[in-house]
Image (tube, rainbow, N blue to C red; front, side, top):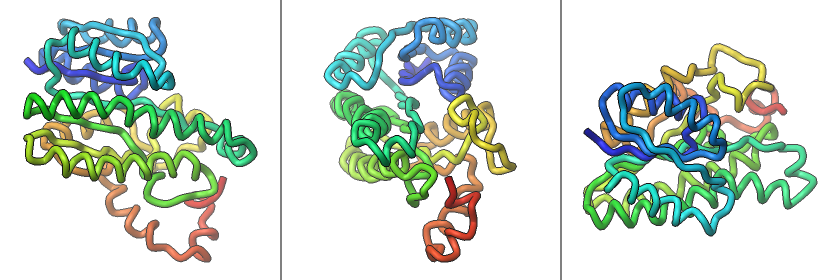
Length: 246
């Protein structure tokens, strides 16, 4: 039995990850903002021992206590997945620093405030698996979502450094670069064949964390797409609205 912490557990993808671990017989501690949604995710984890806690990760000063409480609930943490995030309003973030800062706080700063105590706990134990959901949006800025993408790009770099720091202690850090997924978070986006499905994406996430994969594109096809996108000249990039447009 593994002891698994999922932060942002009420997202569609995280809920599927929780179910996979429940079927394995793992012990789960689920943290999210909405108590009703948390209770619904816990109810889906049939047969597993599950504890829940509510938290707004945007309250940065409280996040160390979130991790301390999770360690108390589980005894120790074998694996932790950080799954919360928010696309925000790109146009609003271009007009207002407060809007831009809120996107950056949710997608970068709050994650760092959780990773610091988590990493210290696992480093002291000399074992553990950290998984953090980022985005292919962090690989190249696009007019559609570049404030969000900037936060995810910064997180990718932070995770690179953390991975190297923890390597000698036996702790793995997996950066999960997700392409668009058909979830409530993308409900206003036109769906294409490139969109993943939550259940399949969750399986890829668990597999990557189990294997200690340093960086995983999910679904894997994005590992072929994004090197091309990163190197594409601006003149061509702007002519492909499904990549560059709002």
